[in-house]
Length: 603
Ligand code: M6R
Image 1 (cartoon, rainbow, N blue to C red):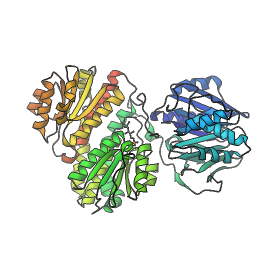
Image 2: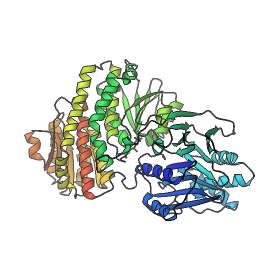
Image 3: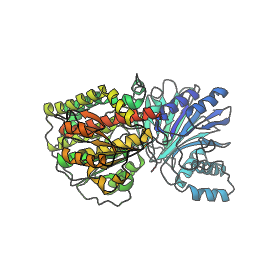
Image 4: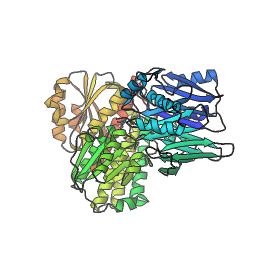
């Protein structure tokens, strides 16, 4: 969602701000802007559309400023226009915002009656106006921030620039925020994502909710101060060194990040297995030996929710433990029954997804332990969890999640084996090695899957079907296709088709049928039902299977031999390739699909 980068220091702030915003482009946005302090003026340059539009304006003006803030906006309140783009500013302050001010309408009405004017339709400007009002009443900047922040509800992060100084201020509630320091070059940074600060700020701080951060650069040093809302000094923040490398974020020889991330999977699977079975991660798994939850409440969004469905199957079938899976935005409001002995298991790539975090909070309030399966170490989910299982996927830049799904599901599987006490080093290491080898083979067949994509990419709609352990993969395959190819795609349990969706079938609808070795005959009967109604059949199924070959209009043959529990992860990679090639043929923006954000920090 919205990306924030701020800088103060001896150099031109424009470079690091634009570089930081470019790195956050993958998160999704629809307009961009920058505010620079130039000779005691707050100069705002902003533009709707891609960051390139803003860069063009910047190139035209060539501004120089030691202090500035930048923002990429993903619209929530108010249309995508230049006026609604951030920063919002006046002659005293400029503000960028990520999140939603829930009581903005009421506050705006009150401020309007007090004579304040608004230039945009955003909720964010309400914070600017509040800040200005408290400042005009004679309060210091810090007190004004504290009062404005205390007046608003909802989850938000703000970064504030003032005309009167070169300080950077920031504050947040349940939204990502990181403050960075480079002591060598006397620079202070602030961002919504540590990734933006890689290579710039070796020291980073994660403030807790309601902590005011103040970055100051003087002639000889850089200081970051933290205050409570009553302006006493705060120690509610976590320090971390920023160990990410810029190389890890390059596209390498691949045309898209998504493709690179699909290809990374075999090596990452091997690495994860080595980490949890042989190396440091083993200790975390050994602590799980014999652990049982009365009920697992698995909660996540989007692709991570699909990984949750795969993990539920593992927990039930491998561990015989009860597990329910919820979409986080539903879980948080459906008054779930949470009992002593239950565990909340939260799955997230970013660890910053608003609904997932709120669901975690709910479990904490009810006193049940929360575990995470998460990619970003130090994320809010990670920090708030009682136990973390990192998936070690590295940075995932493609908005369409690929490698994170595979590693989330695999981590859940390993966690299950550890609880069962049956984590056998050589047996499971080779089982997982078999998976990575098969995925590697599949990567070699990408061109073949491209041929299949060519046969079907112009069709009207796509119905993915699967039974049992392939049902979550049908959902995930359909999600991947719709998000990057902008075509209608649905995932169904194969046996459910005749209960309604079969009405959609005609010669312009493709059924991507996931046919595993289990329940093969039953699944093929469902495929026959679609074929009888002139639907186009693409089977992702066992290789050298005459019946499958005969029924399919196109066929992605897979070698299921020996994979057993892990075969859904293998099938899923075939669907990642299929979605990728269809999207490519359609010419969409694969890494940054329209309307989407990588990290969804609003509910
Ligand atoms: O960061 P998270 O894993 O919590 O994100 C959850 C979803 O927003 C995410 O998986 C989304 O569905 C992806 N774009 C799917 O490819």
